[in-house]
Image (tube, rainbow, N blue to C red; front, side):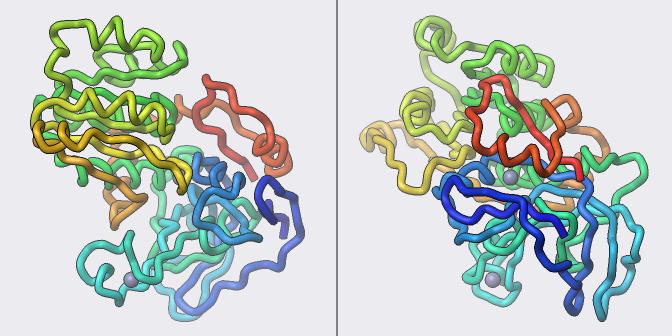
Length: 336
Ligand SMILES: [Zn+2]
Ligand SMILES: [Zn+2]
């Protein structure tokens, strides 16, 4: 089968790999759609947890092609998506609802070959069957929405909270929708792209601010003099994070959602952290949130189709990985 293989930092090629036969309690899925994620780009750049060679791709949907021994309730031809998380289920963290910190943590497309390939073998327990109303394009968003659901579980947003969010890309747009349906009052979106800000307003943001106008429009505005209840970074850019943190208000909460390079560091004022009773949160991938995300998407609480900027082939993904990305780009999907 054809697969996109990252063989080293900034080295990707289409290769012929053996068909992944389903093991015991596994199914092999014929991949139809794969979302390209910021994490894939970090892997390509050699700044994430993966070892090379690796087939990336952890946001996908497709059709079951073959079923391994011991699998019940799933059949060839079923339209499905799958949680890429590979948790051992037996360590101290798996046994205390912290599977995303599993001692033997793994994920399809990160530590094990993923879905930028014609076929992928996955544990049957990770699979959800899709209703006919859900397209393969939407189903490839269950994984990112599962990351959003985990972030919302981390935040425990109080109804009426005033929120500022930096980075209105594909994940930012989904978070804006999640915050809006979960009771935020104001959601201020900050980005460098006017197009993304216009979409943020359609998705429930109450105010949209160009990054270069942040000082005039927010810092200088008396209604924001005490900052925000919740500050979220979705950019993963250290300089943006240092700009964002001073907007955390008294007893406010900061959420690091964007993924920075693994060696990045930022400066935090520990006096402010103490004096303002700040809460600093991280949100790592998915933590048993794939099924709630599936339901959220199935009921269309979050609109994802408008987030697809373009659909490309597996071959076209190689130049896409290599080229500079437009600031207006949202989600790019691979169609197989
Ligand atoms: Zn992702
Ligand atoms: Zn574990």
